[in-house]
Amino acid sequence: MGQGEASARGTTMEGDCLSCIKYLMFVFNFLIFLGGSFLLGVGVWVLVDPTGFREIVAANPLLFTGVYIILGMGGMLFLLGFLGCCGAIRENKCLLLFFFMLILLIFLAELAAAILAFIFREHLTREYFTKELKRHYQGYNTTDVFTSTWNAIMTTFDCCGVNSPEDFKDSLFRLINQSHMVPEACCQRASQTGELAYISQEQCLSGNMMFRNNKGCYSAVVDYFELYIYVAGALAIVVLTIELFAMVFAMCLFRGIQ
Image 1 (cartoon, helix red, strand yellow):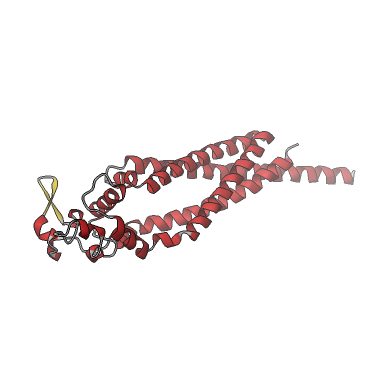
Image 2 (image 1 turned 135 degrees about the horizontal axis):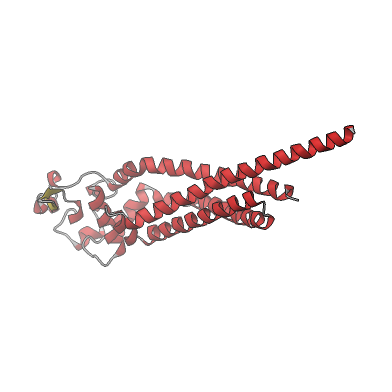
């Protein structure tokens, strides 16, 4: 009789534990579902944003590809969160195993992307951008993707060069446009009857500091996105942690289902 009670008590505890894991997995997968929805929202916002960021992204193939990667990852996390919630509530072993394998692949891909970003971090330095600007920026060639991208950045963020307007000394731009000290995109603008117009384009192009933007674009862009960079980094850590717990709970629930 005592053994039967102990066995029944053990079975009850196992059932309670399995039920707890099931609902914990549902919560974690719901968070993954929300994370996927957030990434989808960010990707769509970048593509339709009317403030000029869309043009910057469209002009740069690397950024353009990155937006679609964000959309793809968001869609996959959205789907995985949905599958995980269904698998947990219905206690379906096939769904749970499928969920575990897919989320493992995503986890490994995210880990590989983080390692690659660390390895190629030197491509995000001031020196790298300055060297590229001097070698490739042409100023007024609208068919050149690199030039169009930089024009969009300098116009959007009211900045000039990577560090300052001095970056255009001994550059391809000065070689092509010898009478201009800085490109037109560096000139200060003021709103007139709802439209932006240059304050004094002639003075700006001749090098007058009073009529050009003197802040470097590297600092301007970093200042603008500083908060978003920290939020994105924190979000990435949270997402990886949630994915780890979701995989553990999925496997525990898979093994516990009879």
